[in-house]
Image (tube, rainbow, N blue to C red):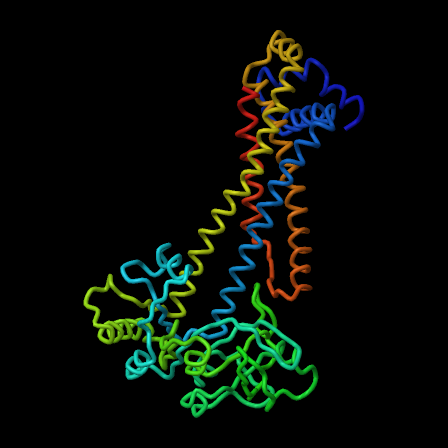
Length: 428
């Protein structure tokens, strides 16, 4: 468009024509938008500060949704490591549901459920579809070798656990045996990180390390597995289940029992059989009094999906507070703009401009501000996610943050919605 034509469309006659008769062509739309941009450029600092508020809000939405998706994918990946052919039985506070806050808080505050025993696993193992099983307990202890100390997670499991967790692969020595389990032998299989801390590049198999001032002979070293989330799979040690119970914890029960099934097509049927067997073993006639929870891999993934969905909605609601703050900033700017342009509005109406035409112009200005903030926020959010992902990888946390397409659409929707909601009242 030439300078002469540009002046024509911005002439007073055409300027008010669009507000009087409404917008009826694409060109008239472009004029209104150009007028809005012109008014915003007249207050660059104020507009920039308002845009920054929206940018921060949109960045928060992108980062939170990307982080939630990355963490969910990681957890799902860890579940897939075990495969889909297992069912886990865990202790539960009687009288409450598996995922209730009472059950979670009860176990989290140290409430001990002592009714899950190895004899329960032996009874369940008689179900035809059960291939193998392993009882388990977890403890955290200080391990030492010579003058080197290291606090690690200790898993007490049966030797058959290597058939359940496929990532447990000894690269030196071997996993402990059924004889070690039966005799509660003081033996340990250590992760690659523990081996490196204690023995460096030297041999570890056959050496003695101390756990609670007791000597434990190293029978094997596991293949390097790396960190996942906030847990390092290389800083662990496995000891026989009976050894952990008798010589380290002083208990005679399990926290969980994992069963590997033969036919995954009969998973639901097998889970029902396990519940019935467990109730017989524990003399339970009322299902509401169950002191155990039975969960298959598929049920676990479904539960994780629901939990992360709820968490994402909660985090999205929290990050929306920053958009609310940005929206208040837009409302404030629009109020100031209306106050400053009172004479202009009066002149427009005197020349025939309608209320809807004036409202439309101010509303467009609010939408433009939020749209610009949304675009910049999306770009910065994607860049921030990429940098955060690389930073976590450098720290050893194998979380892959990805930006879901839904987060982009959500961010754009939030920005436009914010502009409309917080711009319409001052414009009106």
